[in-house]
Length: 232
Image (cartoon, rainbow, N blue to C red):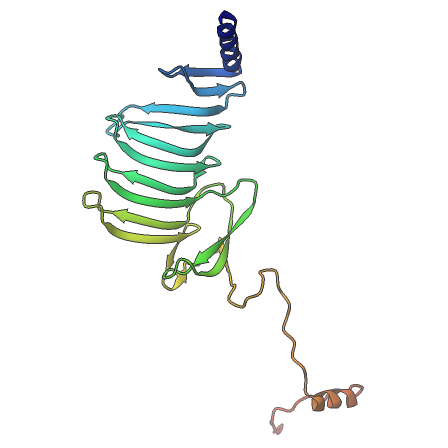
């Protein structure tokens, strides 16, 4: 039994030796880990005090290579949840929820993080009145930030009813008239049923009489068309 406990202590010490710094939770878990390269890793808990009229808060979530990843929750210093955010590549991604300091839901947002390894991203554009219907696609340049993408809902935090909704396509507000135009967003039509890489030009067949005339006069000099002027 003694050997078993010594083995557990050895594993615990060797596991913590890989961290440059960390703190221990009341349960003995290692939090706020910083690896040998100075990067935040694993579960973290942050505390921010009140400052210059701004209310403080506590935040908990997960870091991966110094970037926020997955779900992060933010609480007031009184313990009330005031935000629940989701991250990818250190940027907001997916649904986000924001609450009043009394605990009432006041806003639901939708964001999209773009993979930092790609220069452009392509997304579907949905019909405002029928979210299940794709009406086109849009491409956007990757500027290294998260963009508004999807439905935003604003609530009355006391009554809980919806007060307003908005729909965004890659940071641009979508209206009944379509997507707000931008040089950074290029709509790609899919209404013709062709793939987005199909650039085949349509050709028309000439009538037999025209083909016969062109063949008969193929070696002759073209006659300049007259415009009706008499020259006087």
